[in-house]
Length: 161
Image 1: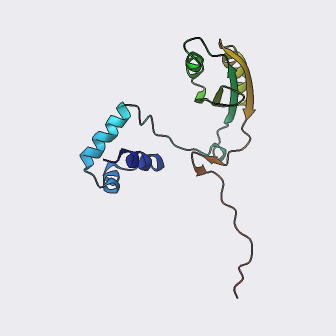
Image 2 (image 1 turned 180 degrees about the vertical axis):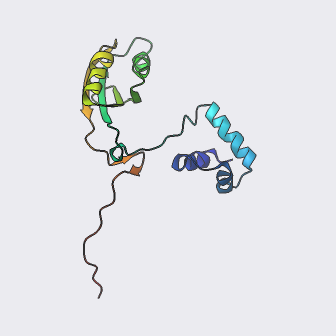
């Protein structure tokens, strides 16, 4: 079975039925179900997510991107600092990056104050962290490949010769 094809189909449509997945892959339904379960157990498939445009709901969400500078620990590198950051439920995504900072942290809060309190009271005091820069998301246009705003209509008049 082409597991990469299976993963790509699931990435584009995580709600697809096992039967439809088997049809696309030209495989037996039981084989697809077993492969999918194995990939979940091996943490190759780590979850299924829904993209939500919170701006169209009555729920306030304040998203932030936080650059975090840190010192690596002897014999452990950045892994221990990353583990300390990741333990907080507010942290939705955590990356080790190249550039002017070591980590990129994505969080969602209810308000800017809630995000600021998280950074000041929980994130910044973590041992090994030397600096944080918080960038508040003002508007989301695209998440996980999904455009959130309506496409603009082309107002130009069509001319034919």
